[in-house]
Image (cartoon, rainbow, N blue to C red):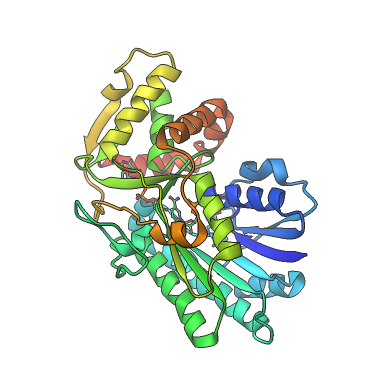
Length: 350
Ligand code: NAD
Ligand code: TDX
């Protein structure tokens, strides 16, 4: 029996990972620690909440006393750390929150794990889940590898870069058994509708404008969320201590290409005339510090661990759209209340 702490398991990627681990590993006990911020939602993991090998813990990763207590009580063998503030636009208006959770929270977890594991590090692991945004922005060619120099531009990516550095510092200084992965843009069910794909699915349904930042030519490399969870599973079990693995979808698209595909698909699914959703596209003021292009070289994880994406973008996008259309209640719940204020503030000057 292994006791595994997964942080951020009520969020988008975390909920898919918690489900995978609870169902696939009955001999692990999964402790899901989440503060349930605006982005955390227990509905995301409702189907597994009664499982015998699952416990939900409601707390803040930056709360020193709380984290010390749960480490003492549950004697974790491993941590898979996903809890974070994750939206770039919010980091531009509220950078301190990103420092508190992404930097202080991560160091607090590292420090507590290190204290608790210092006499016996055998079979322990601190797995830090990070992003490709730490590498900065690419021009038209080239891809991020594990040795690309860090060059973050947004408060979000700067906070994630900082947390990555602390994870490596704990490995180098204290011999903490760590592993890091840096992944490209995820999409799929349960993603909060502040991120491009679910935001636009929601707006198209409601026939609201689709606010495209700048000229729409920024490029992202999209990966279906379950493929990311599968990569984390593989790295957790077979990754080498102290190593970094890049994870990506081999699927680069300009935002406008993606948006056109999404519009066409939704016209079909909603039984609307072809071309009607496209009319909602509105070019708005660009995001400050907007990175032009992200692309991930997945050679290392492919060669060493045999991982590659399994879903192509067409299948993944269709599954995603179907999920949102079949879960209108979920979408309605998360877009009521505070979301309305966020939306007004974020998009009013654009
Ligand atoms: P998300 O915003 O959907 O979920 C984050 C979760 O963390 C939420 O459930 C929230 O309640 C929880 N949380 C926030 N602050 C907390 C705190 N102080 N203490 C405890 N819990 C807290 O994020 P996501 O998109 O699922 O991303 C998960 C992780 O993966 C993040 O670390 C992110 O940087 C990384 N990542 C995301 C993507 C992506 O495309 N979404 C890509 C690469 C890496
Ligand atoms: O309203 C919008 N209009 C728009 O044009 C929004 C919300 C986004 N965009 C653009 C900005 C980006 O070029 O779409 C692209 C994708 O934007 P986001 O969904 O905000 O994602 P991004 O900024 O690329 O970051 C994501 O990928 C890496 C996640 O939010 C991060 O958590 C992850 O680390």
